[in-house]
Amino acid sequence: MSTNRFHTPVLVIGSGIAGCTAALTLADLGAEVTLISTGTRLDTGNSPLAQGGIVFKAVDGDPRLLEHDIMVAGHHINYRRAVRQISVKGPQAVQGILVDRLGIPFARSGKPQCEWDLTMEGGHAAHRIMHCADYTGRAIMDGLIAAIEEAPNVRVLSGRTAVDLLTTHHQARSNEFRYQINNQCVGAYVLNEHTRSVETMLADVTVLATGGVGQVYLHTTNSPNAIGSGVSMAQRAGVRIENAEFVQFHPTALFHRSQRRFLISEALRGEGGRLVNGSGEAFMHNYDRRGDLAPRDIVARAIVEEMLRTGEDCVYLDASQVEQDLEQRFPTIYQHCQDMGIDIRVEPIPVVPAAHYFCGGILTDLTGRTTLDRLYAVGECACTGVHGANRLASTSLLEALLWGRTAGEDIARRLHRQRPMSKRLHAAIPDWQPLGDERNDDPALVAQDWATIRHTMWNYVGITRSTGRLRRAFEDLRDLSRHLHDFYKRTTLSKPLVDLFHGCHTAYTITQAALRNRQSLGCHYRID
Image (cartoon, rainbow, N blue to C red; front, side, top):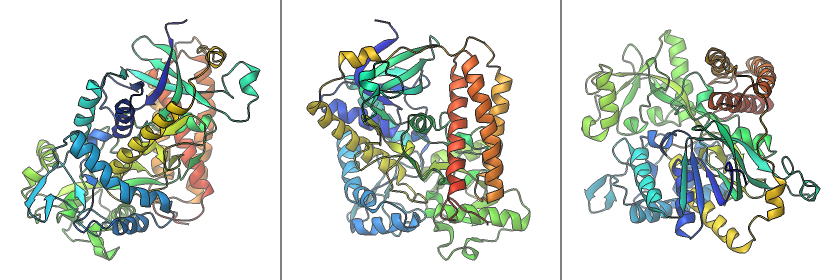
């Protein structure tokens, strides 16, 4: 057998909070897992960048209030059963995994009525968000990575980029499997970035945990790996994608030139920070009665409108009235702004919106199962229906944690009930066949294609949309997609080429969904 070919009971693609939680849950239940990550570490995705916190529960603990806030933020097109599941079982997952199992050092209140220092963010009607200062994602990832490294039955492979899912309808060479009604996922082709060879990773169950899509936009808070690879691979395999038009823009990213916009946490406004224009005038109450704590889609559009009204390049976040010690409560933001020459204790922070969170994705049920047998999806690449048309602040980490655990438990039960992949199916899946041998993945060509994708998405499929803009984006991305398909077939495979292919496909998928949906709602705001 080829050294580039092996079998694993469970293959987890992606190593953020969702992927690591799924892998750890499976390991705790005795399953063998292979966890792959692009880059050299497990923390190269969006999870460690999360600042604000993770939803827990308010002092009164009534899950119906959280359910109400999630539904309002999502404009009531959320899947209510999923919203109820996260409202009831989410806090249990935080307590069981993060507090009891991993001992994440969340901030404590020192008050008898509540052990934790719970904060509030936009769209929430109560203080219910646990945090580790302003580096919550980093703290959670540190705990998960330490546990993963100690788990003897989790095999971690870094420097791996998934190229395509393996399915019985698309890859199997035997008629025995091609004529079966149910299509099944049986693993993935994976590029080994160290050897530049493609590995055939066969799996009884595959989990996509590939994160978000922010890098298909010109301005984003996302990590460089957030290109929608899971959505791209799933869509090509015939898996149902839902709510792809709903891309949330974070209202407050630091206004400066960089590849990734530095996030200014919504928790800063939750603690009393105010958005002001260049004249120092607070403006949010002119756009929504909830003012600075309105849901993110409303705040992002209000900032754009204020910038258009005043002709300014940004607005400002004034934190000078926050009662807490900013250096202690928001050390990451404080230090980063200090490095940029901004003392947030006395100076307002220049901010603009940036692409932040993907509310849609690969459709799953309440256990993380997709419409393709043996394929699960968890985290930001999945659409559980929790977020609807707009995500409520700090629900993303909770969704990743809960569905990572739920999927892991469901897969463990499945592995116990069903037989492993047969040797006949093993043999029916061929190894990767190189598409081309030209070494013409010129960095200048790749960079130009990325520039086309990002400018097109920012200008035409961004915060405000219209039929004319979306049609223009559709035509431009369709032409680029055709070009890349030809380029892909002629050129030796490399990570930059795979990423570009995934990114273009994801952008095209988002644009098509936005063009189909004529209703202006939440993150999908149509000016016509």
